[in-house]
Image 1 (cartoon, one colour):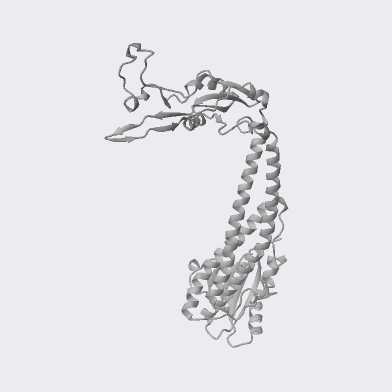
Image 2: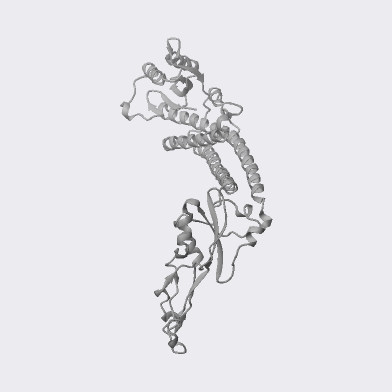
Length: 424
């Protein structure tokens, strides 16, 4: 089925009855002799005109408002289709397809009172659609965050030792055979490496982070004659004269392995204290340097997976599957809720968009034909490829274009009639 677009056209009645204008518009582009579109009557209510200056200013703003609202309509439509996937269904406006709503358009006087000043009326319509856009952003963000949590839970459940929840892999027997430190000075950490990196990791582990720790200071083991004598201390000692890794020698233990990776434990120094010093007569306190964070960063740079913040808890075994199941239920519920929301608010946004189109027709017609308000508007349903023919036919009937082709905008052209195009 060929895609159809719509064109709204309005002409001055010039003192004649509206039926005369309808016949003229039909004979121009929607009759057997000029079969360029199917014509429908378009109800344009009597709106409050205000001043000429206010109408001119509103005319400039209406084009922008039209584009913004269309963008929101498309955004809701796109979200609904993405949520539905291959099962995408046509969104409706008030229970009917959008094309039928356009063709049978009737002004909603209860929702958009026609006796309100035009500027207020446009603000009312735009504000309602803006609220829809803001709510869609919030709902989409919440849904996206929940999807990320679900994907992360799936990764942890079905991944290798570099990503899986270790509580689902380890048991009391395995952990009981490990030497695990968690003291003020030492911390045992779990590190997973791919099997392709296994040999390199085991060979270099005690040298990784070799620039992190300063081991310099008084060395009485190498100079026993200095025992009991005055020695430099505190800030007067350059501890970084001698540097090394925070990994405790001999602490590497293999925990377990799977088809892709190997899990190890290593024990490292938690932190290093940099001594305070006197600055004049004021003492500047020393600082504690977190070696765990710095060491973990070095490991990650080498593409080793540091299982930070992991503490074995047998009570957590099997909870990963429960969390995954719960997240799946939450994502499904949020998808259903967001789909229902899109179906409801698509109609609301589309109704607002159509009312803005009609207001544009009214404003442009008054600016073009003056007061009192006396014009007739119709809606053409135009088959693909015939839009230019329809516009040319209207030109031939109602007058030549006022301006060069290159100066004409996409959705509104300057003829001896008002013309607004759109694609629902």
